[in-house]
Image (cartoon, rainbow, N blue to C red; front, top):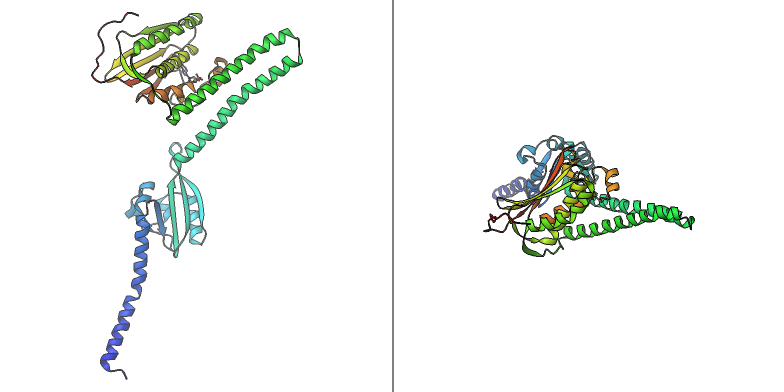
Amino acid sequence: MLTYTALRAADRDSAAMHAAAPEPVERDQDRAARLVEGLPFAAFTLGPDGRVRVFNTAAAALFGVDRARAVGRAIIEVIPSVDLERMLQAALAGETRTRDIVLGAVARQRYFGVTAQPYESGAMAIASDRTALLAAERMRSEFIGNVSHELRTPLSAMKLMLETVLISEDDAEARALFLPQIQGEVERMIRLVEDLLDLARSESGTLQLRVERFDLGDMAASTVNTFAHRADGLGVELELDAPAAVPVDADRGALTQVLVNLVDNALRHTPAGGNVAVEVGREGADAVLRVRDTGAGIPYADLPRVFERFYVVDRSRSREHGGTGLGLAIAKHLVESHGGSLVAESVYGTGSTFTMRVPAPAGLSVSPDIKER
Ligand code: ADP
């Protein structure tokens, strides 16, 4: 038989049990919230009412959202995406969905990979920023498309010309017409493959720079000399302005390749009667090499893109000039691998200026002598 005290004790125990009963559930929820909170990637949970329960720090940073203001709101108020809203509705109804959602204004769109799934009686989503990854994938497939196109076009042309020469057997006229063209296409393809190899080397970081001290002005003088004859033939004045020695610690071959590319471009885009000037000097801590031309110039909208692989402003003109659209991409890589920069300025219809800067060796000032060349 239970005594009064025993009964009271039993009551107390049962009351304590009742009071304690919700506790483990609450602790579970807290623990789950803490877990989501501490995840090293963006995650948030919704309650069964579709309102945000937990919005972790990584999610707040990823979406640029104030966590405190996110909690308790409908997700569409926090992240303005109808697609995300639909995914989470589906997750609340028991379905798991994964897809990319797009946020932001057209020019600054960002892509977020989101997985939404049912979680307890609500839903949970995890997200990551895939913008850079998708851009890299797009660039890679564009690159493969470009390479294939650049190789297939001359190959098709050569095939046609060769067939014509073969069919017309002893037709001297056809041979005289097509064989030099085939040779031209082969040379273009060799240039393209060499450029691709250069680009691959410089992008993969396997480029070995052979650094030595030399005078940038001296390098510019010998490079400009190699173009003198061509400039004469084009009726373009080619000048060098390198009044003082500008020592640099750099790979002479690589910087020569950069200058060759810049002068070659300048001559290709400058009509007869124009001027191409190569200037060498020191500005602050930098050794500077500038190539100015009074040529066609580059439209303002194209200017930031000329350093992209395969970017060609005017495709029809470039083909006739034999350009691959890789030269400036390679040049920029070469300069940047020296810790320098290559910048383009242009006024369309008036001319272009390309400026290369590389760090000059510390403690060396410009020699005041005007060098004889
Ligand atoms: P390409 O082999 O076609 O010359 P580049 O990468 O060297 O390729 O140059 C990219 C594009 O930039 C060229 O197709 C050309 O349209 C433009 N460009 C480069 N240099 C000049 C210049 N000095 N004047 C005008 N346009 C230029």
